[in-house]
Image (cartoon, rainbow, N blue to C red; front, side, top):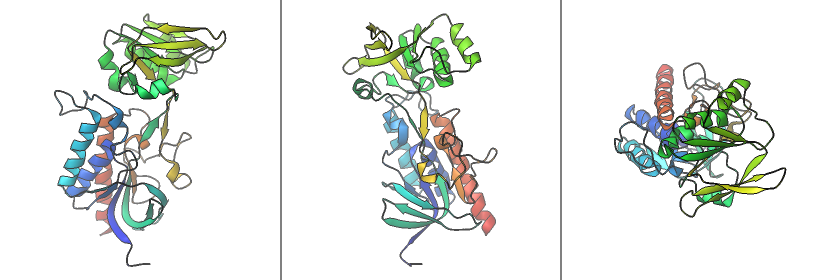
Length: 315
C-alpha cells in the first residue's frame, strides 16, 4: 500500500443539508471530516429561489444562500470542503475495515467511515421552457414551494401517488389545481384517486401533456396538448409542479449497498447504518417519503453520531 494515499477518518460524499449537517457534527466530534461536494455544490436546494420553511430564517432565504451558510458553519469547525466527484468506491465489509474511494477517476483515498449524502434528482420533462423557468414558477416540490401560490391557479403534471398527493396538498392552498395525466387513467392508488376526485377545486385532464410553459422570467401560463386529438389550448396559471418522480443518485453503489427497487439506499431501523460497517446514508438518498431540507439535516446529524459511535466502539 502506497504511503502517499490519504487516510481520512470521516469522508462525506455529497453536499446539501444532509452532508453539511453531518460535517458540522463530525467536525465538532474531532473526526476531521472531508467532504466531496459532487458537481452540484449544495445539491437540489440551490435550484430553489425561496426557502421559507427552514427553521432559523424568520424572513426566509434562498437555497444557495442557505447552503453557503451551512458550508461556512461546517468549515468553521474544521471541515475540509473539496469540489470533486467520487467516481468509484471499494467498500469494506469488515468491522474496522478501510474503504477505498476514487475521486475524479484519478485520486485515491482511504476512509475509516463514509457518510453518503448524494441525494436524489427530481425528474423533469425536458422542455426548454420548463428548464428555463425552474425557480420562476416551475417546481418539483409542492410542500416546498406551494405556499408561494396561495390563492392562485396551478397545474400538476403526473399520474401517480406523488402527483395525487401534491395536487391535494395544493388544493388546500390554491384557487384551482389542474392535473395533467398523459394516459386515460391515473396510476395512483384507488384511495388517492378517490381523494383527488372528491376535491372540488381539482380538475383532471386525461390524455393531456404539457407542451410549453408560457412566460419569459416567470410562469404566466401553460400550453397543453391532447395527445389523442392533437388539439392544443392555453391555461392561465402561475405555477407548474412536475410530479413524475425522483431518481436517487445511487448508481455508484449498485451491487455494493442494499437499496430498494428504485435505488434508494436502505438503512437499518431508525439509524443511518447501511449493510456495510462504517458506511452511513443520510438525506434524500435514503428518504423517499419526506424529501425536505430539515429532515435531510436531521439524518445528517444522525449519520455523524452513528459514525462517531462506530469509531468509538473500535477503540
